Length: 215
Image (cartoon, rainbow, N blue to C red):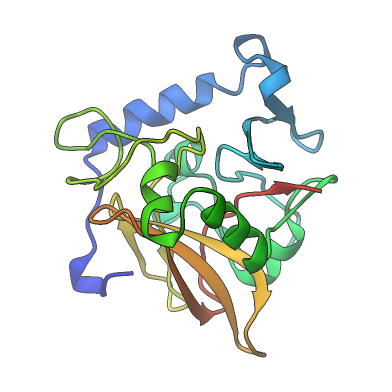
C-alpha cells in the first residue's frame, strides 16, 4: 500500500456510476442464481465463480455485522456498493455467511498455483479496463488484467489503524485467515502496475476487503 502522500481518489462521476450499477446487481431477478449466492442475513446477492475445485464469491463482501470493526472506503457508503466493506482482521474472521469462510493463506496459494503462480495470477484475477479509458476501475496500466477467471478483483484500497484511507484505484487488498503472530496477519494484494500477487503481513487493526470461500 502506498504512503499517505501517494493516495489517489476515484473521480466522483466514476464512483457514482459504478455505485448505481452495483446497486442494480442486488435485484434477484437480474441475476442467474445458479451462479450466485443470496446472503440470508441481509438478502444481498453475490456472484460466485468456481476455479478448479474452489468456489469463491466473485465480489467483495458487503455485509454489515452487528459488532466488530468495518468501514466503507472513506466512510462513504457509496463505495460500499462497488467495493464492499473494509474489515479489521478479527471481524473478517467471522463475517462470512454460514457455509462460507475467510480463506487461509494456503487456500489463496492453491488458487494462485492453479493459475500459473503468483507472478501471473494477479492479471488473471483482476477486472479489466482502466479509469483513464473510462472502461474500468483500475488506474492505468492495469498490467496483465484479463479476468479470465471471472474473479473480478477490484482496487478497493484499505484503511490504516490511524483512520486514514488510501490506494483506491491502485491496489486491491484482501485478508487471509492466517495469523502471523499476536499482532499481525497475512493478506494478499494486487496492484495496477503488475500481474503479480503479493503476500504481506500487517497489523490486524487495518481494514481490508474480504472474499469468502465456500466450505
